[in-house]
Length: 256
Length: 290
Image (cartoon, rainbow over the protein chains, first blue to last red):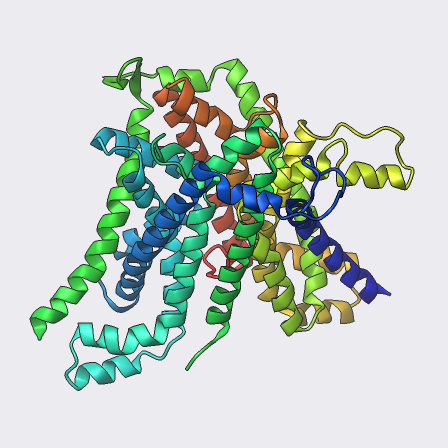
């Protein structure tokens, strides 16, 4: 009896988590504009979506920022994780606490901090400012993902390689990188999803000339219901799920 | 060879260090400085010392608003805790394989756009939404409830979005709990509630505090939740900060507000470290397992 109760509770919570998403997906195929009642299956919102040029342009921008910022964050983050794991250097403690702090800082605080920096330095709000901001909030996730994999590995191989005359770059590229590759890939995927989903930071650091998808959606849903948003949300949801499944599979693949 | 060694080391350390210094440390210090500067209509800020920004923080109307936002976030945290704690306890009774799958199912929506999920909640809570239809169908109510654009809706949305942030730290501290302790207590005659109050709760306290930290602070910042579910009446701290920066352009005030949030974060971190010391256990803040 208690077992049924427990499983029921778990099921209930999962139901609660998925119901809104389910409604969204169903409504994206719903003929009715306001989505209160099911009035027949349709693709028309998806067709409208692909005809909506400004939405498509915002989508393209989002993809651009997502791909570049995830890649840059992964490169910097992987190197940082290796440095934190292998080397002793001045200020190492400060670096790891900065990583920790930047992960816990509420998005909105990071957003205004960066906005103040950009305005003071005279960096125009647009692609570059978005890129810098997205790299910054993705970075700790990559560092932690790679670092925790490094921590679980047997490092005697790298010592052996050093003894046999490999330099640090060779040790990194021939031994460490192949070993941590799943964590690196998963860090990239997480960064990419974080980047394409962000609303809070982006709404501060982008300018009117460079619109991205989440902000475009935000301005659309503030005005009222628009079924194209259901369609694009469904696509975003499916995309995120695919990426997350891949990244989790990569992380699960432990060891050799 | 030695030169190359130095080069790789230099780049590995230098890139990340300078990035974090330039885009995390320096901006944070600039926020602090900005909060003590003078507001300027044309150039946003004047480089002249002023306490005006901080004075606005202690303005009674603002204090009321701050209290409103803080209480909404705390209620959110309590609701998340009330769902998450029993949920994790139920989860622990499953075999390990299944735990991973359930946690994974929970994390999937968490990685998808939170704005989109809040928008979906509008469908759920609306007058002709699923909840109203269901309640009317089973005959609990005659007229649809007015749930959308209320404090209730904001709290509902926040706890929906932030639930996984409460579950994950609690799970990771529960996973480290030594279940032999519970068996021993049971053998010595402790009742189920005694075991919960005297062993499980104190030992998972760091996880609970970590969870609260990860719910309360982001909850105060999520301006889009208040915007989409609360109408214009129920603002969060995030809405106020956003207004100060984008519309009113009172940067010193906005900066002072975010310093306030950082102080709150530090206070909660301090609580967390005290709790870890007390129970000698980590609560999962450092975990890579998000």
